[in-house]
Image 1: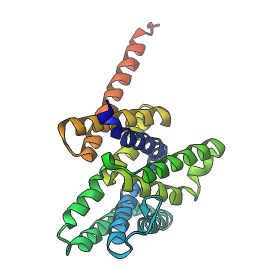
Image 2 (image 1 turned 90 degrees about the vertical axis):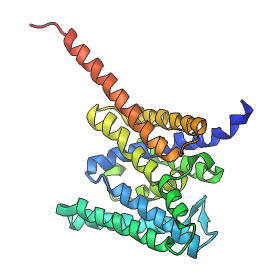
Image 3 (image 1 turned 120 degrees about the horizontal axis):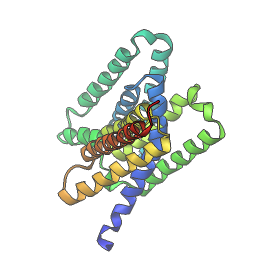
Image 4 (image 1 turned 60 degrees about the vertical axis):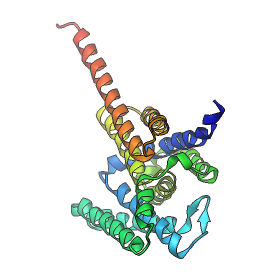
Length: 257
């Protein structure tokens, strides 16, 4: 049992990540800007790579300052797109994403370890999370839920995008772009938009998927990031089938007039 104590930190980080991102994912879906989170996550990853080359050892609670700056710049760009280019917003957000991804490739093109850096930014490595980063994500999670309880309408206002950018930045540093996108969108879409379930239940579903993926990753020595994406989808679809089955059974039990 003691041999697996090191998994407690990534498990805690996984739970905090889900509780942080899932409520934000509900708002992303409600705003109809599904790929905004992917674009901001990509720019946060670009900022991390830029920090490695130009601002080494400049971090804030485990995340490079450059990553926060780049994510906030991307959030401002998304806000301007939504305000002024609403009719083609997804196209412009897609451009923002692909430019960020291309700049990341160009940035590391001269580094013999550049491919590894890109892979780490995309897939992350939750298994080797640091205490400072997990605590930062936990603090953000507590603040988000407290803010949601104290002022539920804050997500619909102008404060959402900068808070979202900070949350995505720390999440990308912890788990990578793929995991952040999957956690933000999959359970809010399947359990929230399709089944009408509350964010807490969707977050619990995401936690179950991530913990299952951690076990699979450690047992079979596979990358934890892609495993999390597949596991969250599998758990979400499982709940969708179960809940649809209960609904169909309930309707069949209603006596006909």
